[in-house]
Length: 101
Picture (cartoon, rainbow, N blue to C red):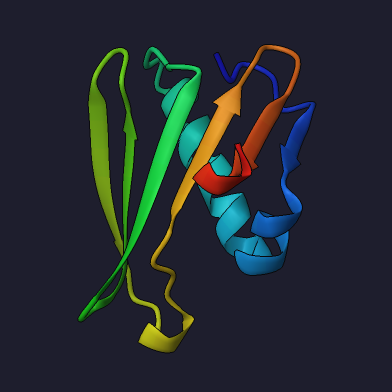
């Protein structure tokens, strides 16, 4: 999963809500796992939380079970408190909010 960087898409809701730099950062997190040779599930989950130091992102997948926590020093007014899914259906990779599914 996530071997190709070609057909990557984001929903309108994600595109209008999540800064482009953050979207690219999420794709990079996935690409880094692929480069490391980690087995990737078709379903990647990113949970955004506001913390005192800025933005916390929990990146996880179900099979094999895996998660990683990232903390970014971002001003709280620019932080997100949302969940984003990235799904690879072989033909396309799509970044979306759960409500867009």
